[in-house]
Picture 1 (cartoon, rainbow, N blue to C red):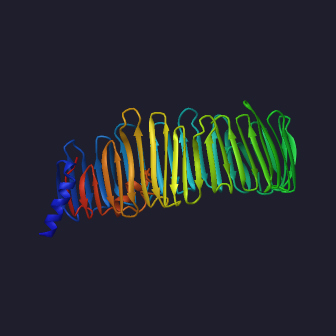
Picture 2 (spheres, rainbow, N blue to C red):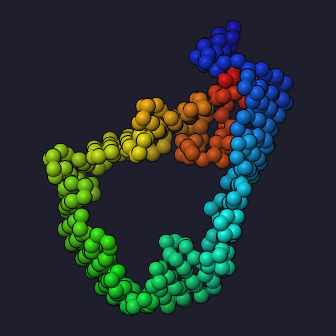
Picture 3 (cartoon, rainbow, N blue to C red):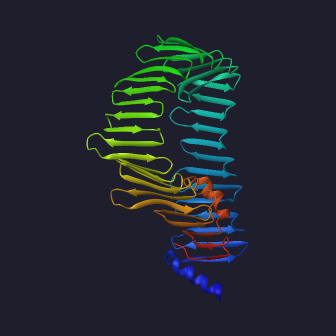
Length: 412
């Protein structure tokens, strides 16, 4: 009797799930069919899965593999013990990734670029711009467009390393102790950390003595010179045509002409107070880790007893992004709102590891338990291959499932 009353209360709470056909031979076989023609079949739930909707077909044995094919675009995805292996393919590109170590990309258009990496040991690249390059680190080889550099060449690293950017090369023999600059009139040398002097005419000059205690650098940009002067830890001065900051030990003063604000802090960065230079309105008050309130233009951030509670919001283009969290991701409430119609488009919120709720245009999903969704709310691999295994209670477009479809009803 108590069980029936409990099930009836749950039904009332989720009454808007609608109606659908279902067939259950639990724990061997469960079939759900919605009025729009979508079908879901589970064998030994939650492991065996077949699912067909108007957008995609997916099938697999979780978490070992899951294959998905889009019915609207030429796209296929395979997850195998994610993140051990993920394969994506489309008409224009094929990509394979394993953990953060192995990656393969083949772009069929426009120049048939291929890229294969076993980080950080082996790199292979081929395209029409640079031809074929390879690197067997740390012994020998070349890679392009990597780590912010146009080209990186190594030969028995750290014995020899050459990095090239915008026609200027910096060669280390060995890294990082001795370096020389060459190319397009650039000159200079470093004996790190004792002394260094470099000059790239019309672009940059830099020198140091006993780095980081004495540093000077000037970058010539379109809007004027960007200057850095540091005598650590006593004094520092950073400036450009729109910005200037000075530091004397733990005291910091910053003035921004571009953003119309002035900031002072001591001891910085734990205590900071800033205001708008035009209106006089306060923009930032920080007493770390007790309190912070920061607000200007399209940005707002607050915290109380960091990291017990934090909030930040930013408007960008036609959307407003808001997020509250506690102890980083123990509690998380994240939402994206359209500024045109004030409609909430996406929302993630929940309390890890108990419950996770996701609201979007396709409906609401509720899951109990939630082990990783709070940490990686946008990770499709975790959401599709791992999360169904620990979700003992779920409410989604297929209806309500308790204990892996032991009890199920409803559907959108």
